[in-house]
Image 1 (cartoon, rainbow, N blue to C red):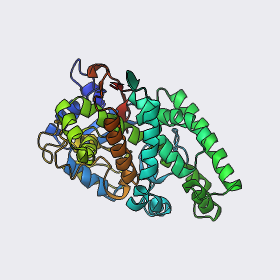
Image 2 (cartoon, rainbow, N blue to C red):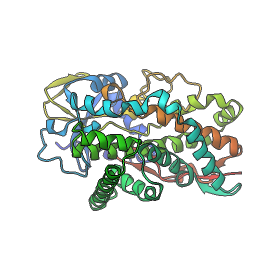
Image 3 (cartoon, rainbow, N blue to C red):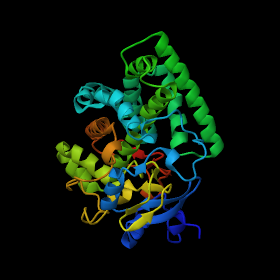
Image 4 (cartoon, rainbow, N blue to C red):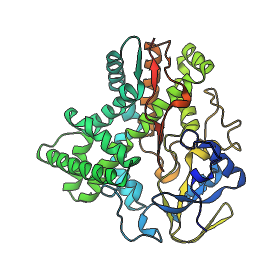
Length: 394
């Protein structure tokens, strides 16, 4: 029997794109692990409780390399190069070590003045009154600018790459994804060539040196740059916009935050738990048979860990479907867990906190300019975020 998709499990009339949590909660009430079908990828086991998620994310028998999949014939798809997300130790360890020094809490803290300056410039460009799309005018360009600064992407080249990366993480069609993959591959190949001809002290410059010294293969160099560019901004765009959305739809909490901006960090953490930008992990593959929360998983089977479902597990978060910036959020899985815990977590936290704090300071009477029910969420296997967020600025 063919396994159902999450959409097929949704009650009649329910839109799982707008609210996937009801479907995930129903599954979680029945058990920790379920067989589902992922359109375009086939069947997989979906993990929906926090304890089972943490167990899966630390089980060495569940690998990220697709070559452990029973259905693997070719890497195929639209992956660019080979990156940390697709790798297991010792390759993953080697690749992560090459860039980890650029993402330490100390290095990221040193970026605060630049992040604040970019946020202020973007706020200056917004009208003082009237309406604006907060995604396109603020939540998107802030992390794009920061990650491109860090990598060393020239300012003139930045506009197009978000379109390509957005198509790859949430494809509108196989043809569009293929076109975006080819365009981004061509651009990154050309950009690394420029860095090779004119070395600099940016992260990309360091990676080119590593490749030239034999520490990275050409495919790994391409994959590393792709991963940092895409992961370095897509999730933060969604985090900033989802945090503002949640605050604007909970006016009592918004008033509390306005009265005490020191709660901004707590608001971001609760947003990570409540509206996980990374909805699920990348596929993992059983390198050997295993049992997970009482479910037998065969060698070669695919496994998806729902970080969104795990972070709303009532066994760990009382009243989990309530947004509460005063909540104790320790243990949420918004950035994953284990070896593949998000390397960019300090940067995402910093950028989101700065973005929210400065936005509310500049526009203290900020409000939604649309019915929340009419807003569109971009959904995919991995990420979930608003396509736009119309707001009244004052």
